[in-house]
Image (spheres, rainbow, N blue to C red):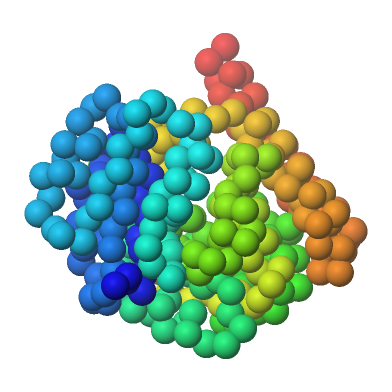
Amino acid sequence: MGVPVSVCVPAYNAARTITETLASIRAQTFSDFEIVVVDNASTDGTGDLVRAVDDERIRLHTNDTVLPMVENWNRAVRCAGGELVKLVCADDLITPDCLSVQVETLGEPGIAVAGAKFDVIDDAGAVLATARGLAGLEGRRSSRAALRAFVRRLPDDLCPTAAFLFRRREFAAAGGFRGDFFYAMDIDLVAQLCSRGAFYGHDRPLAVSRASMFNHSSSTSTLSKFSDVVRFNHAARRDYRDLVAPMDVLAGDLVVLRQAVVRLGVRVTGLVGRS
């Protein structure tokens, strides 16, 4: 007998945070779920820490070799047995009522994906920001409204991966996460799912994103991130022509350009200050 929900945790050298991440998942008020951890051939004892957690809901899979991140994320979901799936990065958290709230939402006809606002913490767990994201996407939103918002905003202004809940069969039909737009690959997946159904945005934080100096995003260049976003915007126009208009793409590209100018200004100011 399967379980209704799978919480999937792809992990690579996550010994600093994996225990806390699992604790947040295990603390759910919703009871019927499994935790699928895929250890991507970590060398820091991540797998040992997972095995040390005494919880029969945890299923640990260990890769023989290190897979590219997108492949490990896809493997994590494909190892799941639940009808509904949430992917939580190994340094992020979810609130105790996250599953109970979003599972109920996915029970409503026509909703393809549930998302939520989120808090941000640092490596020490100090709160940096609260109730971020989802501007204009609170409540039930049509496919068109969701796709337009995805294109017009940066991924960091929408939801972290841990804030989404979706159906495993629809994930499989979409082909899973794509590596074409690495920095935007979670939003790309949600866009594919929302092209088939509505989006529901919970207007309170149900996830916690860690602004870490150790995760992959922190080591990825700003130019690479912005390039991924721009390519996603233009691909969305090609893939969803009835839902995404040219003006949406232009607006999204201008957001990227403004952020690039801001980042450049900060960098130049820093260089001048050190000279």
